[in-house]
Length: 112
Image (cartoon, rainbow, N blue to C red; front, top):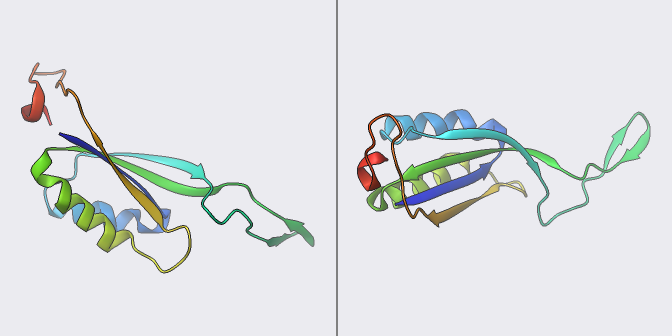
């Protein structure tokens, strides 16, 4: 079992979400987050003054999936979240030690 976490541009959420639902992989949690990337200087003009925001608004998606679905989830996110701009996002894959479905008491891969 794996936890796939993706940090993507908010404008890409709708496409990624729809593609995951179409693949029957739509059980996800979505957060609005802010962060900084490797490029930390984003000059802008705000009311005629230089303005440097420290953080950029992003969306974080988390999906708990069984091992056989990880590659498919990664491929979908890469395809639909991709953009040519800097700060396009990241995908992280972490091991899940245990999963328990509260309603039924199921444990392990069946609980996902």
